Image 1 (cartoon, rainbow, N blue to C red):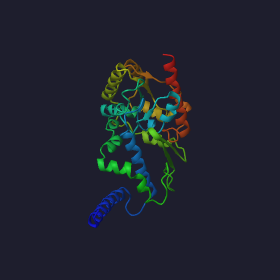
Image 2 (tube, rainbow, N blue to C red):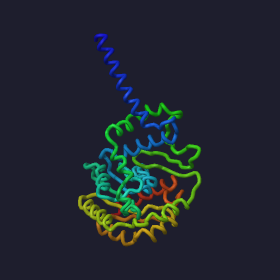
Image 3 (cartoon, rainbow, N blue to C red):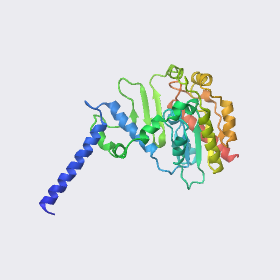
Length: 308
């Protein structure tokens, strides 16, 4: 190799590394590095890995933040033997696009394909059907996806602390989150407050009640799935009595009526004592309750499968 060729190659490599470094720095905050921005990068990686997960799961769960914060797929996998994915997103709605994307994560060769729908009144409303949280990651271009997914470890070296899976630990935050594989974020707050959920839901359903069209789309899809041999389960995730009362009064969701339609479509509705689980903000379960609830889901499925 000539000196010119070696020098040119080295220059080319340095140029490419410089471009990569500039791109990584662009993902970081301007004016200095802060822990909360680092958390954003870590969370983006988590969401992108979920959004673009490979289709190799036996069981996929669909729903909003009460699902992705409230159900551990690993706990379900331990008990059922199903490889499980929590495909929940913030304020997710059961649009055709969201449902089909979630179901695309099922392994087509699996003989025990299972879909679990975590039904909240919010997930059937027009605003939820926009799926803004999911679309944020679907709209990332290839370069940004690549940088977030493949340069995360390198980017962490620019920060004052090593990246761990514990987020939200800045001095001004009482919000704690732990990222887990397969789509679950265990979360809590240092100070529990049911009032947070009450305040958040007081106006949640103003001009935003349950959409009959959304319900029809969901039920039609469940009928199709069951005809194709997919096991379909549904449940209403636990929150708090106070928030659930607001939902019942203002959302237009009538649980008993929906359950009948769900089972008529071919799904199996799972019943739980929702008062036994504890919420840290009136809407989302504590880590301990999330694990307990996940085990209860798994036991319910096993019982139904063993006693059809």
